[in-house]
Amino acid sequence: MKLHFLGTGGYQPNERRHTACLMIPEVGLVLDAGTGAFRIPSLLQTRELDIYLTHAHLDHIVGLTYLLVPLIDGRLDRARVFGTRRVLDAIRTHLFSEPVFPVFPDNMELIDIEKRRKLEVGGRVTIEHKSLPSHPGGSRAYRVSWKKGRGSRSFAYVTDTSVDGSYNKFIDKVPLLIHECYFGDEKANIALRTGHSTTSQVATLARAVRAKRLLLVHVDPCTDSDDPIGIQHAIDHFPNSQIATDLLEIDLNSKDWTNSSTM
Ligand SMILES: [Zn+2]
Ligand SMILES: [Zn+2]
Image (tube, rainbow, N blue to C red; front, top):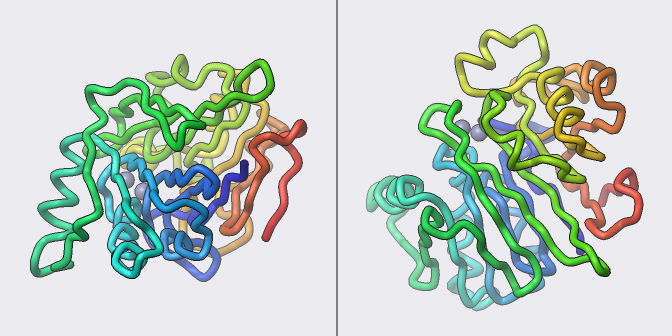
């Protein structure tokens, strides 16, 4: 089972990164639908997609409109979009409003997750979620788990939040932590004001929750350097840290979390 990083930047695309989108093609799971979602159709392995949204900021939802073509040309039978009621209302009212994007596909369904603590995708993975209050309008953390041998494995996807201690328990002992890191350490004040995280904060968190591997996403797109956030500061606190790149894919069942490859 492979996890594909289709968009690893925040806010806007740049020459290296599209905005937030992760996908496990084998089970038809997508996390966030930013501009990286244009890559979804070429990876489809299922007739249905379950798309879980962290929040309704444009860099996480605009790619829902890119699914119109595969939903009407028959490559997809159905897409289910999961989020809080507030997020789904924003999508229906604003993104798919008549003047902005006039066609809401018949086979796209919007599903409120608030009353469902645990959800299942493709009969293979389970999803739990937790609200993240520090970002303007709030965001949602997801923990994705699946069976592996006699035990289970999981990863957490946490984006658009400050490191505020409110979700440590939710991600405790997660082997793979995928966390936003919009700013380098020198911008800690802006990070706090805008509900984002900095390099050392995230790496310290990874160590505190006893993760095994940390992949940083949703980095500042306003510089397209290899290292917009000062990765060495993360490595100093948590050696197995890496900035994820677009088109990175990782084998979720690999014995060794350091075993990654780029397409
Ligand atoms: Zn964002
Ligand atoms: Zn946001």
